[in-house]
Image (tube, rainbow, N blue to C red; front, side):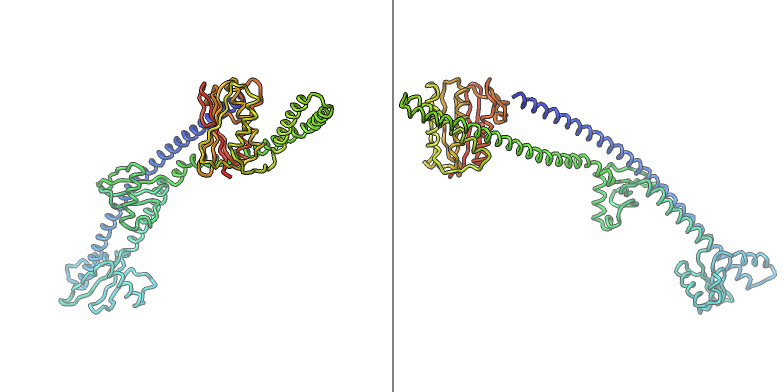
Length: 502
């Protein structure tokens, strides 16, 4: 009993140790997740600040380009006015000033055509276009798409058109600003927020900016709405002022952080599965080894009993042949037959027993008859049949009687040689139950739990193997079941054996 108490204590200690390890692991992982979550929120806040700066940069760039366009148009209009004045030379015209205006335009590409579309003049076009009328006509179409042409009226009703586009410097400046914005986005915005992030308007129904989000996730109003709702549920939105408008930054946890949250569960699941598989194979191996020990011990016992039994049989026959007191010979013969039964039981351990359809009540009657003559008169045996009459079960009587002998002896010992032993036969579908009740001292809950384990016994003498053997005989050889149905201290114990109908 001490072995199993120590075993239970070790199990509890190991369980407590495992619980501490799991708790520490969860605590550390949770702390790590919180730290990473805070770091991600800082990155998102930095991303939001970068978006604000980007918006200011975009506004400034648009305003600058708008003003530059206006200046270039004024420059073109001034160039047109200088041309008109040169065509109407008078004494009070400042010829050098007008000439300077015309020659100062070295950047804005211009093309002058008549009302019929014929090219009259051009300036600041690429060298490869000069003299190529088709290329110039294509350039006129591009200029017309960008800006409305400037009308040039002269000589009363004559009308020319002046086409122009942004200057080379303007285009280079615009490209430079565009490259700066892209660099700003890639170097600051993309690196600052490594998680899916969006900026919404005040009503939180429109995405103004997004980062690390696949375009397919926001290609419909329904998806946008769902994405915003998911992000609001995942993390508290960050309020920012964007172009004097209240906006909100929303984000989701990164894939790594999400995996880290579930990592302990996955880890302990895998480790637990590995431990269970290992424990199963270890238990199976240990059980198989125990079975070999049991079988070897039983067969060796049967073998060792065989030699003295043969000798005893010879002595019984010798006594009978002398014609002396036959009482001694008869009693010796009974004991020899009992030893033969015991030897037969041990020899069947490890072999597949032959199961025959037998009437359970008749088997019990024969077993009680054996025990009644060897027990105190104060022990009352009784059989109560609660079946409809069909009590046939599949059993090996020799092995089953071994079980009954163990149960009856334990019951007599528990009652201190005085009390009632009642055997109730109950049927249930394809099963027959045998409930063996005694009026003994009963068992504690701990003893009841371990009663079928080897070495567990409440007796001063004994190996504690009887109930272990009984369990193996019923469950392994008869495919049945044996349990402690009930037990109360100082009131008694009931064992239930369940067997298959024949």
